Image (cartoon, rainbow, N blue to C red; front, side):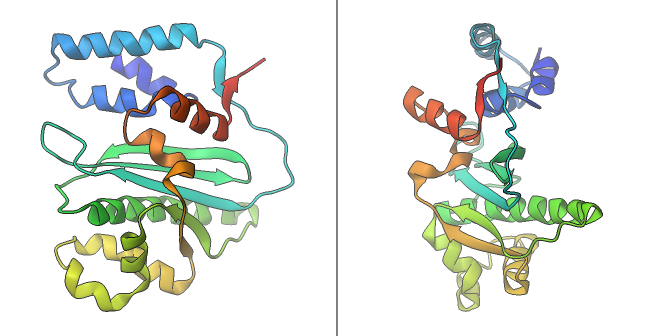
Length: 216
């Protein structure tokens, strides 16, 4: 059941977080997990016609959103990273993944998430070179000001030594001009849907912004 749902997340970003959360318990599932999966299936049954819509547009700029739910997992208190990348108004890449280790602050959890987002942006930039498309200063939107300061201000390194070195490549690529880290209000953080359960109005708003809608 989980395998089938994971296959479906290729076109249904609205179930990404829920399916990935259930996938964490495949090795030792309980009745509660089966109930949760059945809830996802009932939701899909009621929204059969929904999917990602890609509209023709003249814009082909790249931008990305990054978010994290600090210590959201009640089992091991690891955070969940959520990222999504747009070309123009079209959502082309997204992820919802539990972080590898327990972070000690919200800023650290967000920093790890932005690092993963930066890696995906760099991969996309490299891939698009085959189509003669060159991007510099790709905007990554984050709703945590401390994370942005950690990226832009190298003098704060002494306060962040406990963060694994692999994530400090984010600052390196910022200094090279590959990416820009910009602030965005939590209200307009489109990666929020990949990190936690949301209330109906918030869930519907993000789905609309990502062009998840009824396909004719």
